[in-house]
Amino acid sequence: MKQTETIGGRKCTIYTAAGAEVLLLQAVDDHDQSLLDSEVATARSLTDVPFNLVAFGIKEWMRELTPWPAPPTFGKQPFGDGAEETLGYVRDLLLPLSTQRWGALPAVMGGYSLAGLFSLWAGYNSSLFDGIAAASPSVWYPQWTDYTEGRPMHSKAVYLSLGDRESRTKNPVMAHVDDAIRRQQELLSAQSVDTTLVWNAGNHFVDSEKRMAKAFAWVVQRLSPCRLADG
Image (cartoon, rainbow, N blue to C red; front, side, top):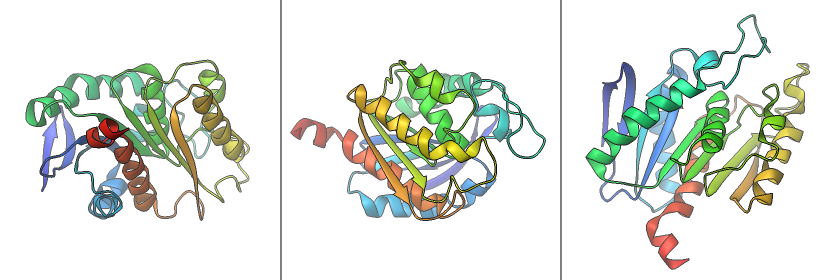
């Protein structure tokens, strides 16, 4: 079942399934919104674990998803420090409402690009999320790797992916994304976090909905109460 509603001033697209075992949360822009039907259908084809997804709209992509200000990397718009505010929206509105409607479910924060970076940051800054689904996350973000060194990840399962051509750019900041994502996985593995790093064919703009579906399906499999009970 799919429905759209406004929650806390943000457009939210909600997908529900009978007997859902996991709650997925995803920060999306208008482009992501247009791909959600395909993303959810693909994710459901990849796992037999029923899940609910709440996709919430982001109005200022360059501000609401980033943890601290940084100069422009492309174009002229600098990055902001709105991640804390966005996390507060999820913590104070979305999660309580979800619990009221469907009960307490293992929660996964996920997203693509800067939304993937936000998801990782949320995992470092909150114990609310059992899993993180970070597809092509912007781990090239200035000072990100330094920030994660020695910092505990609170989520038990973290999916990472990157396109195999994403580092092939003339932009000096973004060109080190391969090294940054490998270091991210190393740090998580050193903390005994259940993690994987998947390499997808193509650059950053290829098959974002399929990459996101694979990310969510992987984490859902690991957080299913039935699987955890068996393990």
